[in-house]
Image 1 (cartoon, helix red, strand yellow):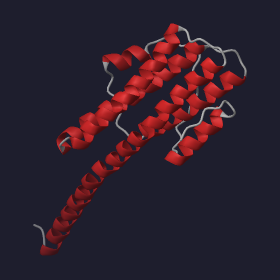
Image 2: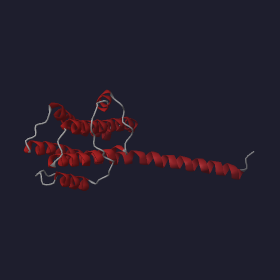
Image 3: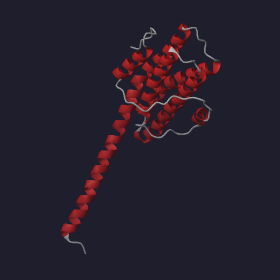
Image 4: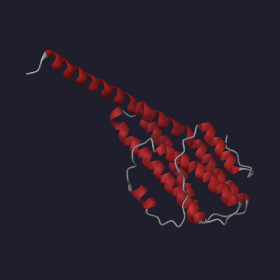
Length: 200
């Protein structure tokens, strides 16, 4: 038999647990929303940087192999499509947001895989141009990786499975690095160096 005091402790503990649960549930969505809103701000900068890579290559008389061009183009297309995915997430009811976050996470993973494919197929000899491209890709990839750590595990769709199963002979090691938008632009401009390409 429980005393009134024991019963009060049990009820109090339960209320505390419920309260914590409500706080946790209340925080989960805003945190994800902040991440998604940040991604939306970074997308046009990332697309500009990838376009800048093409400018560096063409300015140095380097013609992309079709497979490398296709990988870079695919990354840019998925980044552009992410704008629609994020808009859909922002307008979705709470019950659908987790699924849509998974979709966003998967898109980022596909972009990363395509950029690694691009680097593999570019196969530039060592030199200034290769250093510039490697630097720019490293900034983009490590920033995307930082966003990925704040999102659900990617859903392994047919598209993601296909890009992940490609055989690469070389990849870039890019540990996740969080950057403010200002730092993202600054690091990209540092990577582009004296190539004449600027990210604003």
